[in-house]
Length: 83
Image (cartoon, rainbow, N blue to C red; front, side, top):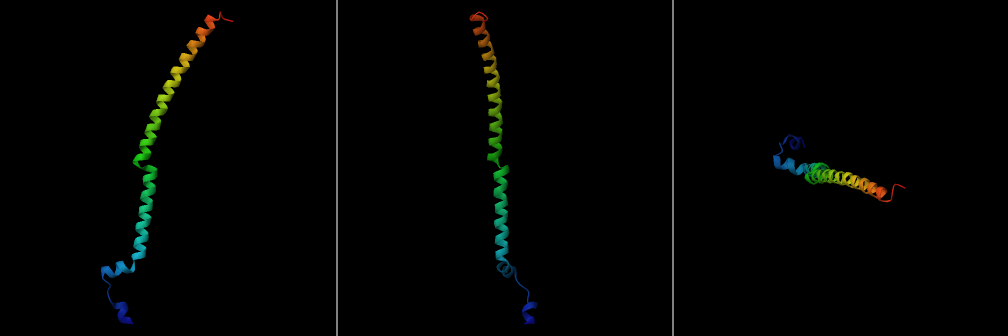
């Protein structure tokens, strides 16, 4: 019995012995990488930048239509005789 504990394990024996733990660590690492990519990945950053650009364009068009609306209201007021 004491001979079993004194025997040195090869690297392949250690891998076979700790295989479930190794697989669990690999699975957890893959899960963390997947979550990282979802949160900080290229697609997320690109979508954010596109939405920011679209927001700027919409704000510009809103300002344009507000000015146009004010001008048209002034024209209507002048045509109607200021009533």
